[in-house]
Image (cartoon, rainbow, N blue to C red; front, top):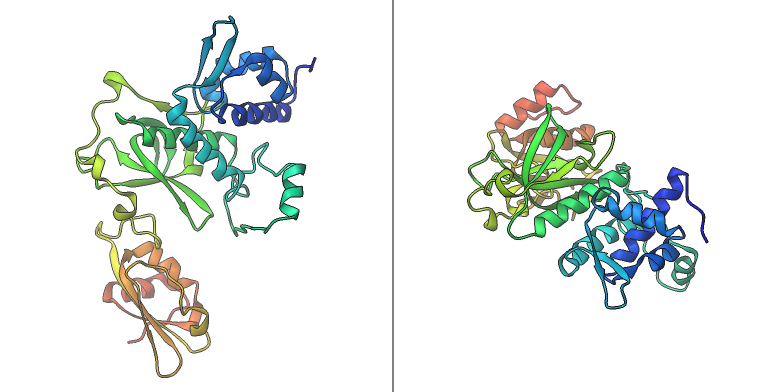
Length: 329
C-alpha cells in the first residue's frame, strides 16, 4: 500500500492527480482515487474534506446500492466544462505562465508529440503564477458561468489595498503574458462599468484561497444590465485593459521612418487603427480613443524612429513625459 506523502511537492502532485481524475466527470471510489493519485485512501479523504481550498471546486459523495461511496465534482454537468477549460488553459497554452505541479507533458505524451506536429507557445515576460492563482482563476470562471449570478469577495492590491466585491464576467488573457479577471464591481450602478483585476495582485491569506463566494443576504442583487455586459465591448482590447472613455482617452497619430515602417506594416494594436503609407517609405498610424498612460508607454518604445503628430493632448503629454520622442511642431 502506498505510504503517506509528507513533502509539499508530493502533496501538490497528489492534488493535481486528484483534480485531473475528478475533472473527467466520472464517479470515483476512494480506492480508485488513491490508486490513481498514488497515495493512501486516508490522504484522499483528508483532501476531499477541504476540496474547495485544495482542489478549487466542491465535491459530492454518494453511497450506491453496493454501499460503496463514490466521489465526483459537485454539479458535475456544469462544472466539468469550466474546470476542464481552466485546466487546459494551464496545461497547454499557458503552461509557462502556470508552472504548477503536474502540468508538464508526461513521457507518453512526449512520445506522441515526437510523431505529431509540434506547437510551441513562447511568451516573453510572462507572469509566473502559482497553484493558488490557478485555483482562484477556476473559482472565477465557475462563478462567471453560474445562474443565478454569484458575486465574489477578495482582497486586492490595486492603487490601494482593500477588499473588492465583484460580479465575475470572464477572463482576459493579454498578449499571452498576463491574466486579468473581468467583472462588474458591486458598487456600480451601470453594468457597462466592467473592471479588470490583475490575477497576480490578488492577496492570499496564510491559509486558504482568499476568494469567497457569497450567497443569500450577503450576495445582494447584481447591477442592472449585467446580462448584457460584454467584456470586449467594455474595455479597449487589444490595446489596453482600461476603457478609453473615462476622461483620459486620447487619439494617437504618429509616423514611423522608412527604416522602421517595414516591421510595422500589418500589425494590429487598436481595433480602430488606420494605416497610411508615406511617399518617403514611412508609415503613418492613427487610432483612438486610447488610454493616455498606455499610449505613452506604447509610443515610448519606438525611440526616435517615431514622430508624434497628434492629438494636441497626446503631444503635450509626450513632451511632459520627457522621453526621446520629438513631437513635430
